Length: 332
Ligand SMILES: Nc1ncnc2c1ncn2[C@@H]1O[C@H](COP(=O)(O)OP(=O)(O)OP(=O)(O)O)[C@@H](O)[C@H]1O
Ligand SMILES: [Mg+2]
Image (cartoon, rainbow, N blue to C red; front, side, top):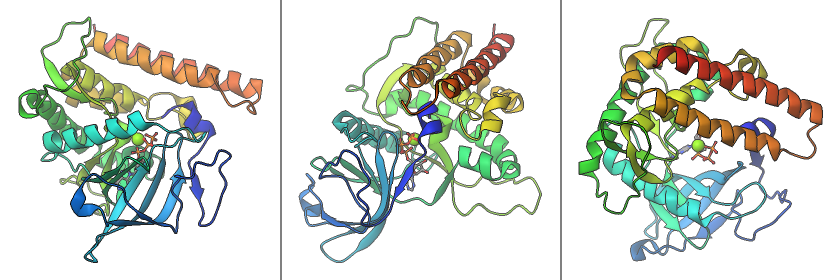
């Protein structure tokens, strides 16, 4: 998530609409039925019926039904790697395919990893089982009380996920995975994913009501959008989680963005997962996020006024400086 998201909210595409400025004939549309081009022979006659489609910054996502030749149907979630400008990203298709498969085998017993059902190379589609979910950041914005009720249990589960990533170097066939060498000390390598962060985590719906009491059972946790799998120090995986938790207030709504990182949220995260990482790894992750977010402002939308850009930039700088201060004061 970055400032592009702040300026360009996801666009729901209505049935029959042709809103795109750059039209790629492969763009999926709601209400359409597609015959799939897949390498899996037994699924060659599957059809995809799309009910809704949303254009996001980097992809189009949709929900629909997968119909097999023998008449079975299955609700599915679809991602097409065509971005907001109409450009296609075949590498994203491959990375997400690889990430989803590796994550399912490594983490499938710890969290729900939506099953990757099919890939259609021609149409740039990955098709997953549909999971009714609310993401952690959506819950924070929609029901902050519920967010805090589940948060400690979620952090315990994320500690299990980190343990599993560390154990997975021997469980998964890693021979084909790239190894990222970092210049800081580490207790060892772990499986990691480009998309491993808190915004790609959610709860399966419905959330059980706790009648105002603290819940003792966590709703099933779902993780998705893993993207490229690789091996790197375990400290990097934990740093990605912690820094992304520190960035949960980034962007929308402006009131949260202005407040900066939520220190209570960070302190609690440190309690549960803080020992998995160290200052160098956290600072490296923060530097990546800083570059990524400010490049996005530099290349901002032409219609955005200079004043607004300057405002966003100064709020963003202050936000990241606060996060950096938190890291410096808690890690030597
Ligand atoms: N299997 C699934 N079933 C139902 N909904 C899903 C599924 N996977 C993801 N989603 C929903 O779709 C949203 C977008 O998915 P995803 O994060 O994969 O896309 P994205 O284009 O990478 O978005 P972003 O750039 O914001 O990370 C998620 O936030 C989640 O709410
Ligand atoms: Mg995502």
